[in-house]
Image (spheres, rainbow, N blue to C red):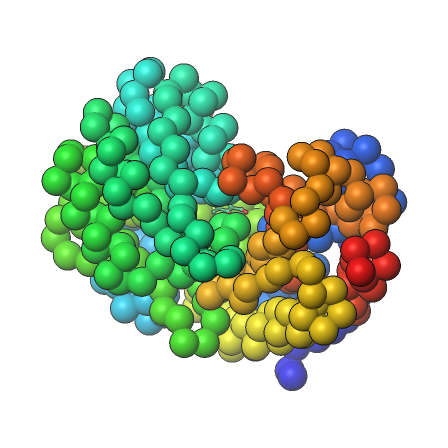
Amino acid sequence: MKYEFDKLIDRKEHHSAKWNEMGNKFGTNDLIPMWIADMDFKTAPEIIEAMKEKLEHGVFGYVNRTDEYYKTACNWLKKRHGWDVSTENITYSPGVVPALSIIIQEFTKPGDKIIIQSPVYYPFFNVIEENNREIVLNPLKETERGYYEMDYEDLISKIDDAKFLILCNPHNPVGRVWKKQELKKLGKICFARGVKVISDEIHSDLIFKENKHVPFASLGKEFEENTITCFAPTKTFNIAGLYSSFIVFPNSKDKDIFEEALGRIDLKRNNPFSLVATMAAYEKGEPWLDELLVYLEENIDYMIEYIKENIPKIKVRKPEGTYLVWLDFRDYAFSKDELGRKMIEEAKIAFDDGLWFGNEGEGFQRINVACPRVMIEDVLKRLETVFK
Ligand SMILES: Cc1ncc(COP(=O)(O)O)c(C=O)c1O
């Protein structure tokens, strides 16, 4: 491999949320951090180079995005996902979660219903509740052990009066890369009832062999006209701390509404580093990403093999995408809080507790495998000691 994904890099002395905020979240920092979705790898050298150039320039005033900025993102979408997006309809947001919140504020009213498909990325719950909108749960169906599908019948029974559905495509935490037919069926149900879709596609570049990311809005005119898509280079290239994401609207009118809202709180500009890093990522980062995907998939395969052989009571299914894996401890039949307690006090591992993703997550833990393999080996040994 050209890039050093195996190299352990100290992050403890470098203001890392993942490594230094465990005390707040889990009550102790003496854990191996496999939670929060960022990677323990250095980003692509081309991105670091672009940032160095900016650093050496030494002037860090307000920055101006040109059309070129959006073109690099649109070219990426076209090349990696076969999706044509006009620069007229795309804009910047510091992050996907703030964008979800602003979209909810601008395009719905207090009390409006918004559908989410649990177990799902927990800030989806927060952005709805904290904006005084109502959550409608359309839980995924586990059709085989560890394999989840959308529950269309349940959706039809609950969809009336809802304004939006927030789709997680690919899905965090269950690792599904939704197929074209599944998305088409979802769109048909939503659009026939006047429900629009916000498609969070932040994990769309992290897809494993045999699977293909399908941008929801790319599925035809009706999809394009009724979908707001969020994507970013931040998960893909491990630059989440730089704050940079993109939002694609059906038309420039809706885009203007969003931009005005960002303008009101004066968050409409990139910082100089996020600007150059984003452009370098999309223009030059592809070889790094392709190697990263090989490394991540090997981490996952290694982990699954190890668990099958040595701790078979833990059930695990290979995700189709994302570097997050949904570990199933239900066969141990622990009481609700016991599993999380065992992880922290006995195994000394910080996972995202399944319950954070909704009640459907009871008995699960989510592991982030975007780290050097020695960390995965360490975690597996800890799990084996406690759960064998
Ligand atoms: C589905 C999903 N959306 C959004 C985010 C975070 O996005 P941002 O950091 O741009 O707010 C994450 C991070 O884990 C995620 O998994």
